Amino acid sequence: MTQHAPNGRAVAPAQSRADFDPEKALEALIYVASRVDQDMYRTLKTIYIADKCHLERFGSLIFGSSYLALPFGPVPDEAYDIVKFVRGSIPSSPVEHAIEAFAMEGNNIIPRRDPDLSVLSRSDIDCLNVAIDQCQHLSFQELKKLTHDDAYLATPQNSRMAIEAIAATLPNSAELIQHLADPHPGEAE
Image (cartoon, rainbow, N blue to C red; front, side, top):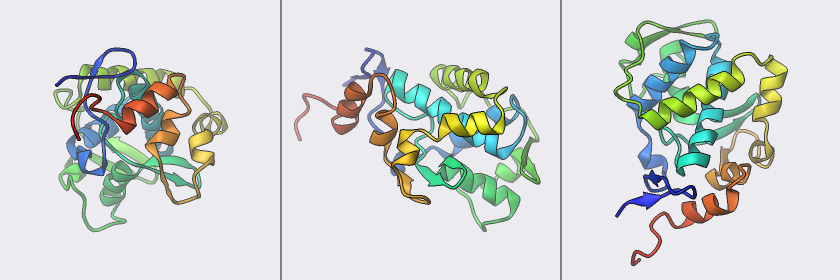
């Protein structure tokens, strides 16, 4: 049965941690880093804004990441693990070939190749572009203010942010929260 977001567009069911798509996360990292200054902070915050766009428009996150409320703001946990793996801070990653896709120079993500756009959907790319346009010229403080939203502020530091709290920051929050609670309305339990 096809599911629909509050705006009527077809969408996948609400995502859980098991829905994380590591290949899509890798390609989103490369896509954003190649279009904004390659700073890890700006890249990860731009992905947060892109995920909020995708959640608002389509009722799901781009690659199914969960978000942590870290001291400098929301971070897509699993994508950050990919970055930490490439940096050498952790021993393994769900996409160990990420080390061939980009390098870390200090806090900069340096793509070694173009993103594989076949992995990203049109809606993914559209929301990534919206976020890039919104974030690329912001100062550090402006980007911090934008991403330190009510969902971030309501979450204890270093804890997982609830997707419902992120949805609550969006204009169509009531419909989104209902969609997240019951992504398959009318289906038997």
